[in-house]
Amino acid sequence: MRQLARNGLTVFGFIAFSLGIGTLGYHWVLKLPWLDATLNASMILTGMGLLAPYVTNAAKTFGILYTLFSGVAFLTSAAVLLGPVVGRFLHRFHLDVYEEFQSQTD
Image (cartoon, rainbow, N blue to C red; front, side, top):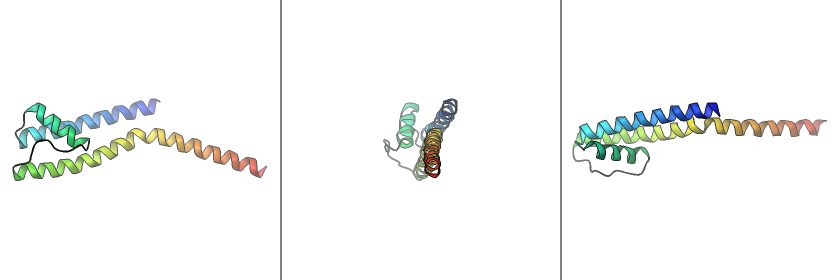
């Protein structure tokens, strides 16, 4: 549970950092107000889609880079968060197989 909580805090920090990058980018590049920039960043980060249209080449370039980063960030976050759970499951699974093998050889 401690490892899961630590990974949860790590993921929360990484998501907050990623959301901050997107918010700053949408605010500076697309000239969106802070709330709209945060909304756009959170929509892209979660894979829901874009709200404000990209009108300049700089905005389109930022959109491409942030979308690629968001896809990797989402998958990485899911892996870090679920890692301890899957590891525990596999550990128990292999332990049961080993015990079954031992009972067959006796």
